[in-house]
Length: 449
Image 1 (cartoon, rainbow, N blue to C red):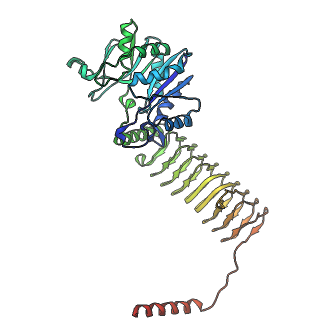
Image 2 (cartoon, rainbow, N blue to C red; image 1 turned 135 degrees about the vertical axis):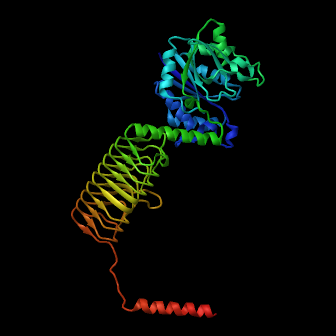
Image 3 (cartoon, one colour; image 1 turned 45 degrees about the vertical axis):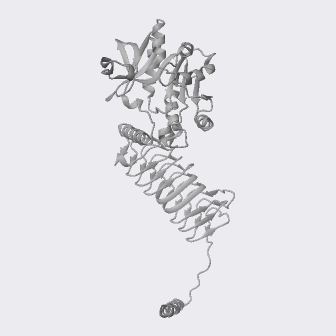
């Protein structure tokens, strides 16, 4: 069965107290809308339609940044969830398959749950996602009989017996796309808010002799985000779950609660992660690496056996091959470090290619920016870069070459050569003593004045 996703993302999110559309607020470095879309993408949908509203241009740019094939439609007036779904239906007029309705501010629905809903569609015309609420509060209640969903009752309309039900409505549902299109046309807005509510399609389906069913999920999957406090709670929930998954998959976290992961972080088994390591988006760490305390990684790849940190920073484009050592206060950006390279202290490596087993001395800088353009530094295999070397790009250092400590290298160095680029030292005997005496006398004179 083909699948289409309809993701509702039109709300302003007034309680967020922000100019940014609610669904673009970030959890683990990604808009919460991306989290919802990613869960749906696991079903390999034929189409994805996102319904935008408030600041639709920003939402559209974000959607296409994640999935260039997605379609964005605009709900110019926010008249309820059924009205929002109706805006998506023209995009599915020629579509033969099921539609799943998701919410951009409900980021944690799992792939397994959506797959269970898709399977359940073989038994029911409409499938609703429900959850057992610890505190049902004012959620809509799901009234069931065996596997069948009889109706959805809003809290304000429920009897005391119905309010005692703890199985609640998440709002997520799955139905044949053409059937869903027909049902949303029948939804009325004869309620206090004057809105068209999507849950009403269940009663309409039952009235027409169709069946409805419920797939249950953990309440944590249905967590919605409507305020800054809830956003912080969602971040904490994501981090706790992501850390737990890493531990289950064989990653060693010395102090899990101090490690912060991005939504797409990948770490292989037997990797050691020390306390206070921060991951930005786009990081892959292979098995058996060691990430030492207080390091920050983003947009990089760390290979097996590499050691990073402590206090290291890997920026986008950093590629560390096997057994590379990047030590304390070393920053790497848009650079490839081949197998066995060592840069252990106080170094900046940007826009560079460094060959196997090369040693980069403390205080080395690749001077890659001239104020307008970036330039690349190339260092061969087995080279030795002396401490405090400035490599003024574009420049190339050959295999087995060496630079002297404190050198400024502006020309290419052939293989096996030693390059020295520093001024000759001049020593003036007794000059320091006389200079200090002069300065102290001047200071004493100023104090008396």
